[in-house]
Length: 563
View (spheres, rainbow, N blue to C red):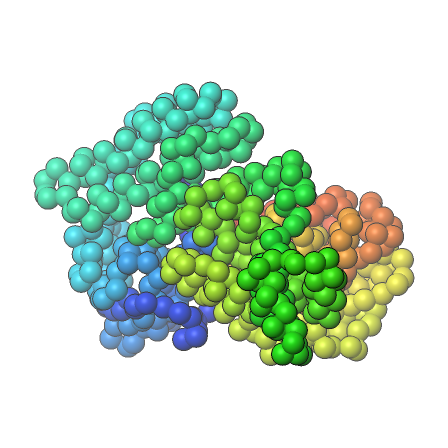
């Protein structure tokens, strides 16, 4: 489980500074020193990265870099949306640790000479110091206990998915008790920190919840009342990486129930109360007359008095259709959430609606929906979490606007922004691709086949910046966007996505005919598949490792590049 958690935590790292525009309650000050910092170590790793989670997006960790001073000291401030949050420290890929942050100050010290040579490297003072100093002891004890139990540890997931719901619940609880018992086992010679116990209890409880939701998803059954009741803790501290994974699994489960509800009762799920529609039109329409507003106020207060009022509302809707469609679609979905779940779960799903669909909207639409959802949501942590990721989405608005407005597109790639090359053509797919690859002779090319609507594609593309950071600059990334069935993706949304997710390289967008023409050339022609082309223009691999396998992929590309 520790390895799995690290995968979520340390990959897809967003190395951006958090904007002061975020609505935050408090800050965590992290300061400390690297003792015995040699000149060589400083040159190799002149900063430390501190990351924290956002409950709405597993792939959107929020990070800040603390520059090391010549004497080894560092200091950084992180916003805190929950009273306690897991923080992840990465020293130049050489040393990692997890600790619990709270508003106030955490001090961290470690010895540069001891990296990789000692079991306990980091020492903590300040907020949650006892828990943070005991946490490595807990991890060691937990690892030992899990390795000593094949049923609850090493072989747990081999048989878990085939169990009945009641057996799955029993063995998940047993595994949680084993993991939580590691706190006592680790602190036999000292006093166990109550903060550590509560932290680990949260983690182990929510692993149980996560895997039980996964069990329900995989075996297609509705979860128990106890699992539904557990959702009340979604907005409670501490916020951990495990919480984010569990919340994501619940969201996936909720999506299935929502789709089922739409299928079973389309008349309700496609409609909205008249009073709500009148309020939305009144509050989000431009150029309404005083008479229009008064009429809408009457409908909002009393409902429809006559059929002509429905025609009146339809006419106003048509004048502001794009804006109102966004809001009406959100309100329809929100109404289903309220039918299916209690208040905390509904509040979470309401803010998650935008978080999971950000890629579908332009940044002005993202801001509009964020503002509306903020006004419809009462849970502060959820509101702030949504605002945080929306601000990250729109912070590149100037570059997005430049790329969206770029018109000088040709068959051969043209640099529209530094590092971003765009090509477009009506030629046959094979001749178009061959022309681009001919221009790249002498370079190793990593071909990324993707689709913006495909979840797996979006997950993999989040690893691209980290992969590119490990590679020589002369390795070229060629992004091939494959067509979407029954959905036309606008160039504007694709270009916005490129900038927001730092997808530097050459971008081609294939239509159906071009894709079919390349069926054998780019086989497999599936979303989220990857290939490597040698400097001589021939394929080294048509089934290359994915960006998420960062080290393996970087090694494969560097080996081909050196041949």
